[in-house]
Each structure stands twice: as C-alpha cells, then as structure tokens.
Length: 165
Image 1 (cartoon, one colour):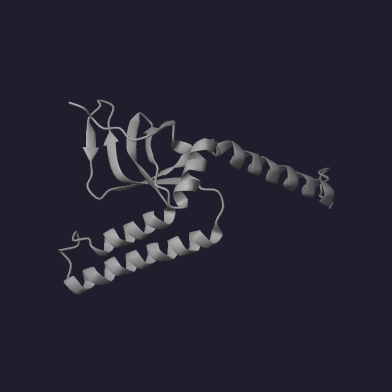
Image 2: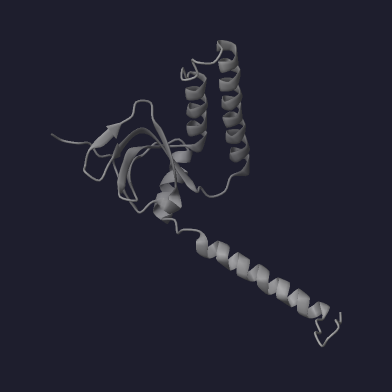
C-alpha cells in the first residue's frame, strides 16, 4: 500500500506493527497480574474440594482469619443469606421477595457456570470470619463470608487467630 508524499507503508509492515502491538498488550497483561502464592493456591484448591482449613490472611495491613470454603459453598451461602435478608423492609414485601430471589438466583447461576469452567482458583473464600485491624482489635461479624483475590494476599498463616485478654 503506497501513500502520497513519500510515506510508504506496506501491508507486511502494518501486519508486523499489529503483531508487535499485540505482543506488548499481552506482556502488559502478564505484568499487571499480581503473583499468587502457589502453596496458598493449593490450599484453596483443597478447600474447593470441601476440606475447610483454618487460615489467617494478611491483606494491606489487615488480618483476616477464618476457614477456607469452596467457591460453591460461598455462592450457595451468599444466595441463602440474600434469601433470608430482612434489609429490604422498606419495600413492599412482594417486591422485596422478588428482588431478593432474583439476586439469589443470579448467584446460583454464577456458581454453576464457574464450576463448569474449572481452572486454577484466583479467589479465596472464607467463613467464620474475624477481621483484625492495625491496632489489634478485631471485628467478629456473625454469619460473615469473605472473598478476596489470591494476588492481593501479602502473607498467610495456616490456623486462625483469636484475641487473648
């Protein structure tokens, strides 16, 4: 392909430029994905098989402690929590029920779709969660579930923490 005024660009050069641009984009994607601790990834894989191991995670200066649960259990419990939610009391009861059930069904669908895809885990799911802040005080949240990206975990301990007085 030739252009006027001395700018010559062939189809081959254009293809090479596109290929180089695609390689740079792929490299940027790889670079921007945070590293994942392979041992923690293995524990999540074991947790996804139903063995709920106790773990304490360090995430940006905060400690999160609880039991690893499978993605399937996380999605099921989240859907159940939504179904039993009473936070929508200002709405008409029927509308509240419809909204809650619609959201819960969406979680059920995501759970089913994800289980069919498989692959390496990228998220960790906990129940019986306690969150310790930087002062060592903890928040015990009843019926709490926690979901975090494996690539965002700074460190971890096998076992849960509890505050002693």
